[in-house]
Length: 115
Length: 114
Image (cartoon, rainbow over all chains, first blue to last red; front, side, top):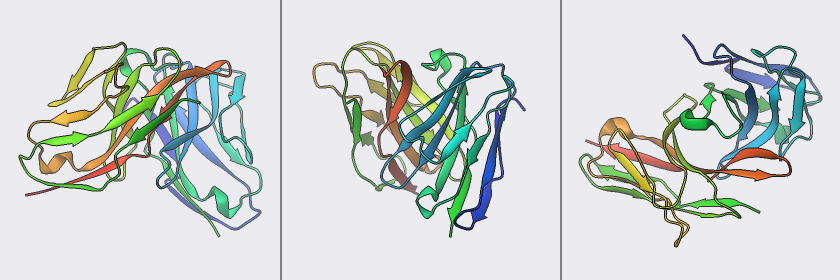
């Protein structure tokens, strides 16, 4: 099925560990982004990419790295996990930066707990 | 900076009741406005959108009108169903710092009982 696929769905990390959240889309979307969702705060943009090889920071980028080597994939790396990074992470993609007529397509999320 | 404020939840209604979820925004320029819905265990889905003042977005019985004079984009549905139980997010698209991004409200949880 076409869409945005995120793995894993759940993850528990110890403080200081590193890991990569995977995101893949098969819609040939140029624009991809990562959000984190925290209670009472909506979704906040971590990093985004406007095409292969081009990435930039959003509003809460500290502690995260991204790369975009292909149009399809946009992994998010946690360099040294901290309890403050406990959150639900969503990957989203769209044809354009504004989402166009169809908006953004979101993955089903990764629930991360850092202990 | 740009921001979105939604009414706090949870909102609890009986089936067939009328729904209103309030959303107001602060923005420079003329943003597009969106409502997204998140069903349990899933990602967000675009519910409806409006791109300019007085536009009305509609989908699945839900409606919202872009009111520039009151900077509002309230979500309404005339008769809710149990299947409408979800979290609803109001959002605007903002161009700042050289890029476009979606700015979300905190979300409003809706629970509909039979």
